[in-house]
Length: 348
Image (cartoon, rainbow, N blue to C red):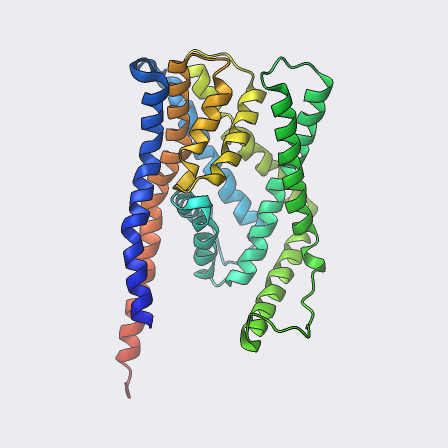
């Protein structure tokens, strides 16, 4: 049985590798489709100084998230310096970008924290707090954007679409935030109905739930200074991350409000969740291109979107893949050493 499961896992690798190749090639194909040869000409004249600024912003985002992880863990995963936290950040972001819907990111994060003696259930509690801070930032920002677009004639195109999209995103984030906020009050109560899981699985799920809940509450009880610092780091991260498109537009000679590029990226990344390709490839580029069309030429749009994806997606895979492979190699090596030591004991 175990052998057949491993065989199925190996059989999925070619398909997953094909999806990754398609995801990496999608921005190149769409750039040529949108802008043609003129897009490549605009790309060749992209200022090197702006490209360096975008790369610096990406590196800043990685370090901000690494510092935020260190503060939230608060020593519960052992001594964690900035370098080790940065390795966890790069590996988890690489897995997030290389899997459909980003499903691999949380799994790799929990697995790496488990190697530092923090169980996946406790790691899930820290992860929920991390996502809660993200939701809190976007709730505040989207609330201000909704009020701003309703009260002021911004001159943005698709005014009705903008307002309804912002309201929809705000409602979704509020719903998720309510689930996170009410998590400590959830209870698992015995029911007279037949369960899909056996009693053993029920006990395991209940224990994991209690550990995640305990970690969730313990993280919320961190000093207000620490929680305030995490919130500031969250704001700095998303402002830096969502400034990448603004710099890309500047590099191709465009002139668009930073607020519009921020909103464009939010909608583009929300649309990317409906793509079956890793990183939301295809839908993210098309969504962002459609919202930039009223302000830029097709050549400028194609070049800006390609530069933006190279820094916000391809770079994450390029920087995180070696770290993820190194963690995987170390894990396999430790397992082989443990197996050899177990076989070498007397009586085996």
